[in-house]
Image (cartoon, rainbow, N blue to C red; front, side, top):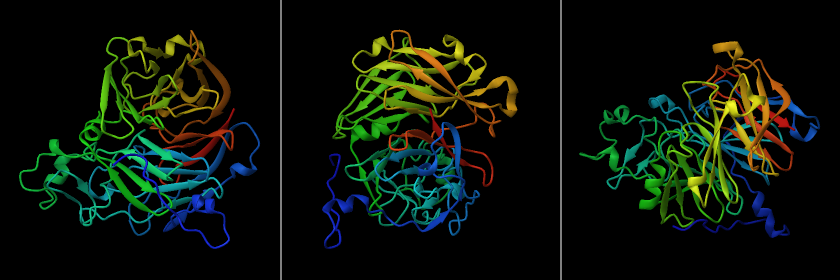
Amino acid sequence: MAYPVPDTYSVAAGQPINAGRHVLAAPDLVGGTVHALLAGWSGKGFQLLSSAPAVDYNPASAIYTASGHAGAAWDEARGILWMYGCESHGKAQMINTWYRWDAADGLFKRMGAPDPCVGAHHVTADGFLFADAANTRPWGCHTFDTLWFDPATREAGFVYDARDHAYWADYDGWGTVAPVGFDIANRRCPLWYYNTAKGVWRKQDSAAITSFCKGSTGSPVVRDPGNGWWRVDGATVSHLAEDGQTLTSGSIWGVGTYASVQARLHNFASHLVIVGGFYDTPGTWLGAIHPKANLAGSTVLKIADFPALTGWDATNTWSAAMPDGRIVFGAQNVSAGATGGVIGAFILDWNKAVPTVTDTGYRLGPSFWAPSQSYELKCVWSTAYNCAILVTNRQGAGTDRVYGLRI
């Protein structure tokens, strides 16, 4: 199935045909605490916007359970942050529903109840993992930084691999989930899309897509509109063509090798830039720069290369590309040790002969998370509001928060 898929929407008599572009599927639960609205905020620095509802795994009442392993995609025209992804460590955490945060009212919204687990979760004879008997919805999974939003089709999509941290050993004892003799290595991993106007799913599948989706745990993916998708996975950069039929890969071994787990990947016309990632030694790495046409020219960025980052750690950090091509990112002051220090906002100007990092002077904290455990993957830039929007993670019941950051 080629991408994208044209869609049609009905509008009421007398309304312009473009009215259909703003149709939204209705949520089933709404909640959260609003502290400020983006429309009423004109300042700079960090601004607390919303607090998420309390963490709740009861499917009847859980308004928001997107985990620290979830990703996000920004719908600029409607001012909506779309989120998908779950912990998936056991049946209670197999949450396969979408969430959204609306800038207009500052509230969290659940787009339908998750499929119960085990419930109708099953694997088909040809290797697809479905959560419903009709084969229309996927299992919940870790998504990390693999989400995107397509304004032309109003679909939010993500790269799917339900074995990613949803350990097959957990499911092997479910009895009727998989066909007799099925080997999880033979699973099919499609691209999944959620139509945000109609509330329905579709998948895109091919041998190339399955290979692309089976990347290492947490390695990031970025959509390159009109030109497919890119993935940075350790020593390999992969490109999936727009039609999903062709996969090509190039090595960055020895020149740009970077532990991309839980990192953020940013797409530019000629380059891919990665920021953050998981490291056992905080305060060592910032990211890497990969020229698409010359992967041998890739370079890694070390914290020590930038005086502004002395004493700071960019492990698992949030980041967002600004309209001028620079990247705003967060770093944590490591002097406070395991309890965490303040979060600082910095700007990476990567497109120079010698990249630079500038300290904005804006601070958030003291932080609520420890070094290496922030998992700050839900961060986007809004052109309309001229700011970054980020959702903090793993802060305990009722304390996950949405912040704005204006430079």
